[in-house]
Amino acid sequence: MGTEGGVVRDYRTANGENPAHEGRQSDNRAAPRSTHPGSRPRNHPPESNHRPSPARSAPRLGPATTLGTAALLSAVALMATSGYLISYASEMPPVLYLMMAVTAVRAFGIGRSVFRYAERLVSHDAVLRTLGTIRTAVYARLEQLAPAGLPAFRRGDLLSRLVADVDAVQDHYLRWRLPASIAAAVSVVSAVGLGLFLPAAGAVLAVGLLLAGAVVPAVAARLSGRTERRQAPARGELANTVVDTFTGTAELTVAGALPRRLAAVRAADADLTALAGRSAATTALGAGLVALLTGLTVTAAAAAGLRGVASGALAPVCLAVVVLTPLAAFEAVAGMPLAVQARERSRAARARLADVLEAPLPVAEPAAPVPLPAEPLPIAVRGLSARYPGGERDALSDVSLTLSAGRRIAVVGPSGSGKSTLALTLLRFLDRTAGTVTLADGCPQAVDSARASSDDVRRVIGLCAQDAHVFDSSLRENLRLARPGATDEELRAALASARLLDWADTLPAGLDTMVGEHGGRLSGGQRQRLALARALLADFPVLVLDEPAEHLDLPTADALTADLLAATAGRTTLLITHRLAGLAAPGAVDEILVLDRGRVVERGGWADLTADPGSRLHAMWQREQEADGLLLLDAR
Ligand SMILES: Nc1ncnc2c1ncn2[C@@H]1O[C@H](COP(=O)(O)OP(=O)(O)OP(=O)(O)O)[C@@H](O)[C@H]1O
Image (cartoon, rainbow, N blue to C red; front, side, top):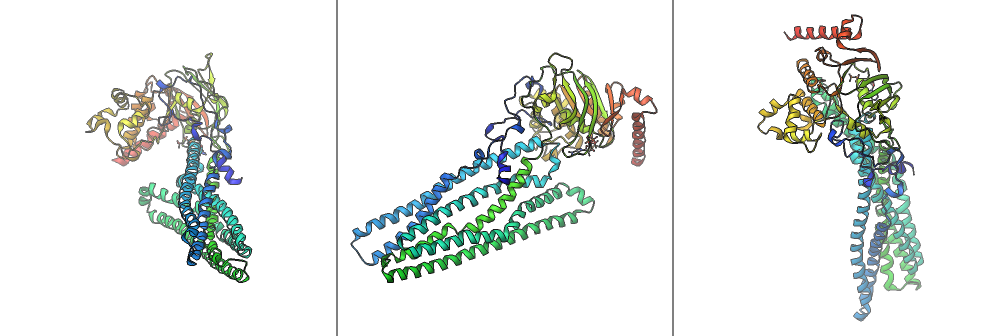
């Protein structure tokens, strides 16, 4: 089935078969502790083993084809019986003799509209259901690919795949398969039917329909196949440059690069416009050729009819039938050149969807996920290594640590040393290549996280990411994502822990204050504090804070780090940071791991490590203090 199968094969989660992610609610889409006992058995099968057959996903077009054929045949018969009725009526027979033809004209006239309406209803219902299935499958796949697997796709291009390419798939059914089947059926029946009146006219019609319905579309496909197939990637490119330009407008303006980016957008737009122009030219050529063939066929049928009348093979009153039937029958094939163009377009779109649906998953779900222990601590990480899909080397190598109840560990290291990779691997957004992560380590109910569903693991280990998404909603709704049933008191307590309550209390609308798109009405620090409050409200047994103070100015970053260390006191926490200032306070964290190139190169308490002049942490701390001093001088 080629790419067609590639897309259809994977529509696995449709029809509610895999309600896998209903419980994800916070930054890491995890549910609050109160809803986690970890022992709920999963009721969805592992995705990688579960692929529905194409037969179940492709729309059933049989009824629509039958109705469409009936509608077009009614139109052909209407034309033929009208011609016959007018010719016969001109002979002025008794009215009673005309009644049968009159009734047939009425029946075919009504039939054409009724069948056409029913065909549209049935075909669109079937196809839209399939589109819904495809879109669900694409969303579900994207959800599984995120976050570690998504960088393989560009954002605008993904948007285009999600919207335009999925829509283009409907063309495969509604604009190619359905009209092609109807055209074939109507052509055969019309040519045979006319042949019964006059074999020569039937033959002429058969040749005309064959040329218009098969040869012209083949020529159109040859002329524009490449153009049609290039449209979907070109649309993706345009979407990508537009999204990139919009999201980076501020930076591009500051760097003076906006004109260059706009030129790139215009170039992508011109490319797509040129493709659309070439496609339209082919459409016009196809329509022109079909109109020409219609005229030639009607003329040849009329000539054959006249010869038949002269030789006595055709009753004169039936001449109009022979002339008018081809005119109506060509309606069936008139859209075929467009249909093959739609086929080529949707073929490319389906291939692009298959890329998404068949992209390797960064995490493989176990075939039979085991329930997690009700009390998941301590969590022992031993020899953990991980690699990104397509990566040449491990981004994380042989990392070990123990997260026991209330223990706080800081992971520091230079950019690219694997800190975020450690978080992703612990949360099972990325599969490990070696090592173990044992929940309830040392207890009889100990379980390795790889044997549980990743959703369950994310109910135990929560993440407050550096780029935590803030929704375009109110403060209250943003917080309630973590715990839908939370009372205002609980929300206020979480805000207080994140040191945001004083500010929230000054707002006229209080918790109902709208925060804007991506939290645009908040400062960077307020956004991060809101994300922290949300993570605290979710009350995960283990909280991973990944660079929560990233992108903030130094005083704000240090204040936030100090506040979040205070807010997470007594909680099991893994704090990932490249800034050390917040860790210097006595008892801030229990252990510090220094990562470099994915490996733990140093570990210990703050005091011990910084006291050793040869230690990495000592050197990092010195560098940070010197840099801060220079910044202070600059500021003065
Ligand atoms: N999605 C990805 N696909 C492939 N490689 C990746 C991906 N994300 C990160 N990497 C690579 O993995 C390595 C570790 O990256 P990671 O993001 O864990 O570093 P980090 O210590 O968190 O850096 P930073 O402090 O800058 O956030 C880097 O070499 C990086 O290039």
